[in-house]
Image (cartoon, rainbow, N blue to C red; front, side, top):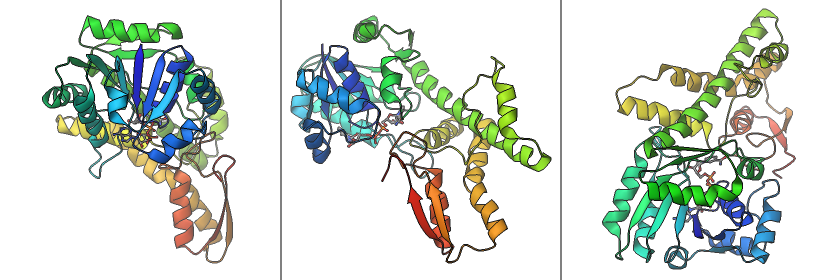
Length: 353
Ligand SMILES: NC(=O)c1ccc[n+]([C@@H]2O[C@H](COP(=O)([O-])OP(=O)(O)OC[C@H]3O[C@@H](n4cnc5c(N)ncnc54)[C@H](O)[C@@H]3O)[C@@H](O)[C@H]2O)c1
């Protein structure tokens, strides 16, 4: 099976390396020439545990390669995974321009029937639009279907999360597409949840928004604990034994960040409002998080009165441990405020230097 993966970020590159590890023939395509050249030399462009080893091993074995050339990437692929970014637009909606660009590049270059699989997080209904866009722009007489296969990996242990995923979600509109995806994932030997495309798209948003909700809930409880003399860590420990609640995402902190939860909460709010629904819970989640991000700064300011000329150490800059990703990192919001207030800021991060 010839697989092409579009986009070699946290999602695409990990998927490509893991598909190769499971024996598939994989070609990763990216617009970033420097990235592609580095990957061909065995250099992993992102920090992700075990990823570089997997890349080197499978590149040497001839199962994994990289290109910037769309024709080479798409002309004879059996399956094309799209893993490009879907960042937040100013109005909170998801920017689908990168996904649409890939769709057009596929339409122009595919010379063989193939299945296009969207791994990027996209609003419900996007797969329908991507399929229509490809069909409108086809340069050759080929049949292309689109399927959804949202990604649930967490940065920091993305390779482990992919090879040993809790489940694979596939959203298809035909038996043929479902069979093809079942075949690709067969060597992983993992539970597969097979649904229609829209449900698959919604599962991803529902999961990320639920995780964000857990974080904001615990931060709200932590703030109340502070006011009342309770210890939130003890409270979380007491909660964690209840299997209805679970023991993860109970750590209070300075709010969630990263390239997923902030944009996916806003995107779901946007989707809801476009459909005439007021998603009150997720609005509150976003609101709590915005305030939480600067809670520590405001506490310190209250105690110190001024940061002017003070030397301030910031320990940990990325949005969470084990990643080099600074996107939407709450630490960055705090650093900006510290600099505005005249602090002399010194940063330390064990991964990002
Ligand atoms: N990062 C995560 O932890 C995570 C987890 C699950 C889902 N997702 C979703 O997966 C998607 C990708 O996220 P990411 O963090 O991997 O993004 P990323 O920004 O790290 O990587 C995107 C890559 O796509 C490349 N690209 C852009 N346009 C291209 C094109 N036309 N052809 C080929 N390559 C192109 C970019 O150069 C970049 O290397 C997003 O929708 C995100 O919400 C991310």
